[in-house]
Length: 107
Length: 120
Image 1 (cartoon, rainbow over the protein chains, first blue to last red):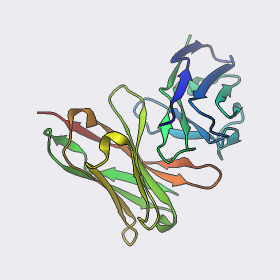
Image 2 (cartoon, one colour):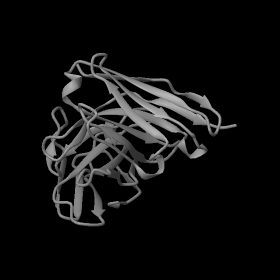
Image 3 (cartoon, each protein chain N blue to C red):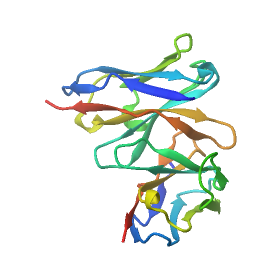
Image 4 (tube, rainbow over the protein chains, first blue to last red):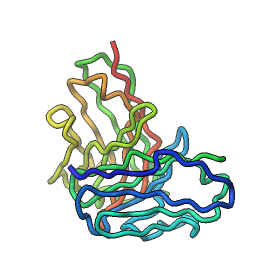
């Protein structure tokens, strides 16, 4: 199976800051990467698909990049509602895998 | 509006069985792959299974192969997950998700989840 190594596992930031979360795949996966946001007690929500495409309705302060093995999710000008957990996800193989998650907390 | 509503979770003893359902509405169910994703308490997300539109292809994560079976009823717009020989490590919230396969594939809609607890 393709392993997705996500870092950091937790992150503290303030409203207005910019943050970057990274995900490294154990093999080349082109741009078969998605990013999800999950708030406590809620289902995940799709933010970015195909590494860099913004899902409809998602604010433009969220962006994704990467190709091959290294991928990033960047959130600029953090808002209070952005403090949540984030997961990367690969769909290159039919055995899908997620990163272990990053918990973004308010500093 | 796309809606996915899971049901069927509960408490079951190790070795027992449970069938989860996911009722879909707001889109042409028969035109989409569907998936199950689970999340153990306090842990991350784990993909469990994906079922093709016509059930012609099904994929499962390793630890559930041979124990879980995904199926669907396109006439009733419902996705199922039959879980047999349940283990304590299967304890999790189980989400159903629509799998949009265009442009690399993604889970674009999720249900609210149903909790499965395997314990004696």
